[in-house]
Structures are given as C-alpha cells and as structure tokens.
Image 1 (spheres, chains in turn green, cyan, red, purple):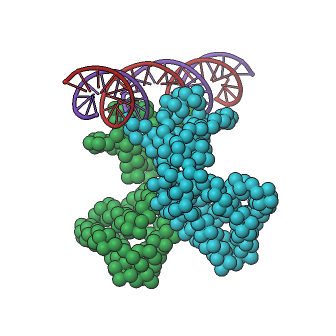
Image 2 (cartoon, rainbow over the protein chains, first blue to last red):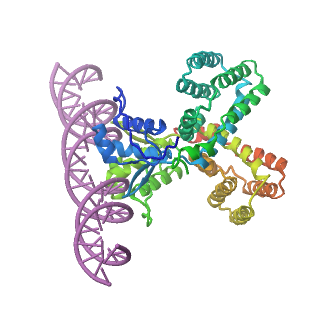
Image 3 (cartoon, chains in turn yellow, brown, orange, blue):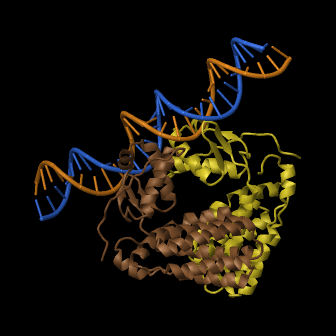
Length: 235
Length: 235
DNA sequence: ATTTATTTTCTAGTATAGTAATATAAATAG
DNA sequence: CTATTTATATTACTATACTAGAAAATAAAT
C-alpha cells in the first residue's frame, strides 16, 4: 500500500477553558501535523485556518511562526505554507541528542533519585502495563514520554528534556508511520522500562546504561522501507 | 562597584538589506539584551520599541514572542514586558548540555574529521591568536563560538549546535559580567583551543576528552561574587 | 500549436485602528 | 491618612487595508 496522494483532513476540537486563542491554534495545527492528519507537503494558509477556526489571522500567524521554528511548517513568503516533510537528518540529530543526554542522565539518576519521583515512575509503569494489556499504543507512547520526563525532572534537567521534546516532534510522525507497519513490540519496550526503573531504584548504573543503550537503539526506524511506502513524506 | 539601578540605553543600528522588519526588531532587541545595554529587569513595551524603530507593532510583537520563547524577555499580559533576569538554573542546564554534547562530539571528531574543516579550524585559531595579542576579548569569544560550531558542523550535528547556541544566550550575559571583573585569561583559553585542534588532527581522543573536561570547567563562573556585585540581575 | 508577454490571483509581511481584559497609578472622598 | 474610584497603560486579539512577490491563468505573437 502506497501513500502518495496529498490529502487534507484537518480535525478541529473545542478550545479549552483558560487556553489563549493563539495556543488553541497552535495546538490544533501541531496535533494535526503530528498525527499525520495533515500529511507532509500539504499546503495551508493563515487565511484558510483562521476561517476554519473562526478566529482572526493574527493568532494563527503567530502559531504558524512557532511551528515553523519547530520545523513542522515551511513558510514561503508570498507563496504559501506547507506541512514540513520529515527531515531525516533532523531525526538523526534528535536521536543522537537524546541518546547522549539519556546516558548522562541515567548516571545522575542511579546516583541519587528522589523517593517521590521514584514513586511517580512506578505509577507510570503501572499505567504502561495497562496499555500493554489493552494494546493501546498511543497511550503507551504518551506514558513512555512522560516517564523519561519524570527522570529528567527529578535530575533537575527539565529544560533539557523540554529541548529534547521539541526537537523530537518528527519522531512522533515517524513512529505513527512505523505503527501502521506493525513495527513495535510493546511487551519488550515495557520490560525495558521496568528494568530501567529497577536500575534507578537499586542505583545500578551499569544496568541503567546497558538498558539505555538497548532501549534507544531498539527504536530503529526502517527508514528505507518507510520511504518506499510513504512517497513524498521525507527529505 | 555595584550595579543596581535600572537603566535604559537602547542602541539602534540600521536595518540590513534583505533583512525583514521582524528580524531587524529581533536582532536589535536581542543584541541589546545580550550586550547588557538593557539590564535584566528593564521594562519594555511593544509600543515603545515600535516608535523607536519607526516600524509597526506587529513585527515588534512577533520579535518579542520569540525572545520570550528564548527566555530573554518576560511578557506579562496586560502588565508589561521585562528583560528577563539571568536564571542560574537555566545557565546550569545549558552548561551541562554543552559539556555532555562536547564530550560526545569530540569522540566523533577524533575518529574522522574532514580536511577542509580542519583547515577552517586552523584559520580560526590564527584569528584567535591575533585577538589574544590585541587583548580583544569580544573578538576572541566570537571566534571561540565559531570554532565549536565548525566542529559540530563537521560532525554533522549542526542542529544540535544551534540548540546549544540558543540555550546558551544567558551565557553571553554572564560572560560580559565576568569580563568586567577581569575573570578571563585569554592565553590559557587559547592554549586549550590549540590543544583541542591538535587532538582532532592527531585523532587523540584521550587528549581531546581531557581538554574538553578542563576547557568547559575552566569557564567557571564566580556566581556568588557576581550576584553581590550585580544586584537584581539574577534569579 | 507553441512560445512569450501580460494580467490576475493568491499569500505572507506589514501597517493601522480599535476593543477587551487586566493591572497599576493617580485622583478623589471620607 | 486610608479606602475607594477613576484613569491610564499594556498585551492579546479582532478587523481591515495595503504592499510585494510568486505562481497561475489568459492573451497575444510567432
């Protein structure tokens, strides 16, 4: 099955209370991009989105600017705005950054880790187990990301995790493409998470480092296959 | 000597050809913040800057939003915009990120480094030597940053260097404060740069790693002293 | 029928004016 | 002198208009 045709399937949800209109526009557009409702290469415009969301151009424009900074949109002045294609060089650098930083963080985590954060990790792991049972992939990956966030926060490196998160947005898109090809084994990933938390709890840095090495390299993306199947999605 | 009084000394230069008005506004405000012409805590407004630069509010507003994302401005809705104080936790995380990534990069650099990039490093080193002789601190630090950028680019990690640069903006402000206290020894820093490039050239990873460890830790900021001297600059 | 020139359309960037909401400062009343 | 009210300032947002540049469509020339 080959996905080459451009399509537009912009999904709109309600604005949350306390959410500014600019954040609302940003959330909807980014969610649609990350979920691949808006496939790479799709053309958008400020006017288009402001009409669809029934808001003025200014907050849409400001949301677009931010998304362009995050490499999710390509804005060509006087020409148009396009959903960015997945930049494989960018994905490789994001993966490298994360791998190197996770190694450094696990060293700190295995040395000294707050009790309350460890408790939160265990709660998160429980929820992951539920997702494995239900084969809830989206839920599992959300919790996966939360879990690593808890570890970075507990090591006083919140901003670094925020940077990694921002740089890893294309990772979400690639993962969804991989999911469509049945590329993930949740039980194995879950088992690695469990071992990682064990390593933190027992202050076993050697185990922690080994798991991090396996864990991140496990998420190997069969890029060549994806490129053949999803024509036009990558650069 | 204590610097506590708020002051406003916004320096304006001409817009460059090919530079959008938004980029112009961004460049001027960020340069003034990073050079400490606008001291931490100074109040600004969109209206204020648009009048001073004789441009409309929209590009100023968009520049402000970006600067707020980069932690250089604090925007308080309906209240005002303030030059952000230097967040020491942020500085610590930026330093950690850079240190960890430089260690990882030097491993790659000492394994395989392109000839043309090595050549550029040597040119850069020559220019640094000139700056040491002239005691041109600003020139030296600009070249310092360029040098590290060359290394990251040669290792195919341009985006990571861009992230480090963006996250290290407060480093510029701290360095200027340190300079005012005569805290840098250019000859020593230069010597370390020379050794680093030697390590890359001779593929001596051990030396490279040792220099990186010394180099980054050498840039130790006497924060407690700076906090006493520059009251109100930090959080 | 093909190529070239012109016109039209579309979009982002920018300018301008106005309102809403909120916070702060100034003025006023007790 | 203190509390209350009013005025002012600022950001967020709405709305509209204009400019500049690029692409598409159309007309004219070959």
